Amino acid sequence: MPVIAVTGHLDLTPATARAVRAALDALLAARPAAELTGVSCLAPGADTLFADAVLARGARLVAVLPGPAYPDPQATAAERAAFERLRAAAHRVLVLPAPLLDPAAYVAANEELLRLADELIAVWDGGPGNGPGGTADMVAAARAAGLPVHVLWPPGSARTGG
Image 1: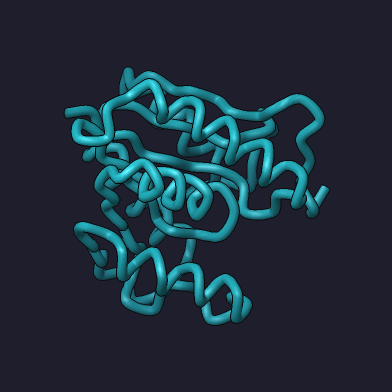
Image 2: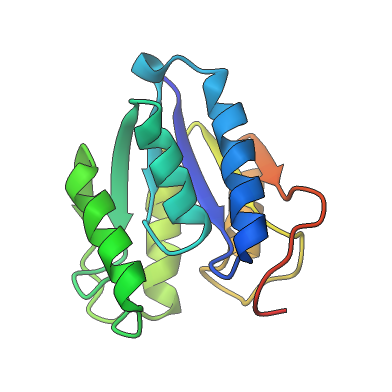
């Protein structure tokens, strides 16, 4: 039973989010829902799009949360509502013990995602990233571990942050 983890950018433009969701739907459609488990930290952007796509297929969702204070207190009301909806729909929720949501907490969450996963989907523009715990860091760790990595960055995609 394949377990697919996700990593990706938080700051997708609306058009990019629509294109990524379509690409996720197409990628997941090739897999029987009864044999699929998706693993996500339920962050805004790529993680949320992936979790919604997994649930829309009728597959299982496992949430890995970096710490009990997650999501970040600076999350918008819409981000917090999406997080709560997905957390409630998850088949399993793993809450890691990090007391602070710092880079180490996100690195630990990524390590748990990779421990559970058979492959990784990365919604990633290929950039160098923001350091430990970020998308580029996660892709490098997955490749170093020998996991297959599927990079999704549809033509014309952009981030709101740059």
